[in-house]
Image (cartoon, rainbow, N blue to C red; front, side, top):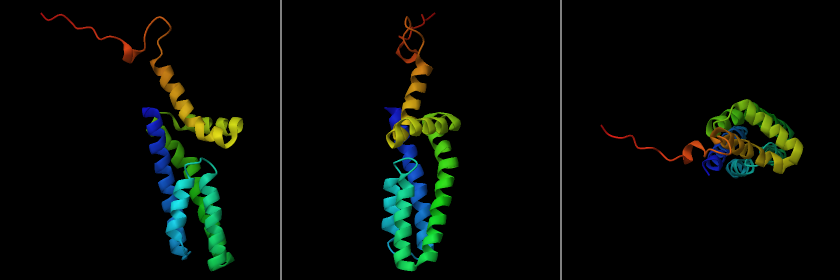
Length: 158
């Protein structure tokens, strides 16, 4: 259960950075509804790889209607910049720390999950990798219980 909690905390941290980055860009440009659009970015960022991008497209459409094509292009550039920062640096580092996995393992798990299972695979890949690593670290073979399940011996007092 702590693995799932670490995954949710890590994803929430990444989603918060996405929402702050895109929301700050929207606010600076003067796009109306910057705060609600930031909330949409935060909530959609829980879907790895595509969530924040889809919300960014929505923000770009709002910027296009309200402020014109130049503002929409700037919003698209901000969304691309934030998503590149998140996907290539922030998510692997945050997930690695919250799940005790190497960042490369997180990237490989995300890539494999996306290729094998699409969006659902991307959502489930990192927690499955973390659980598998947790099982590997405590497994001692079929004839011995895992480290945490062994009965502790009391040493005789002299």
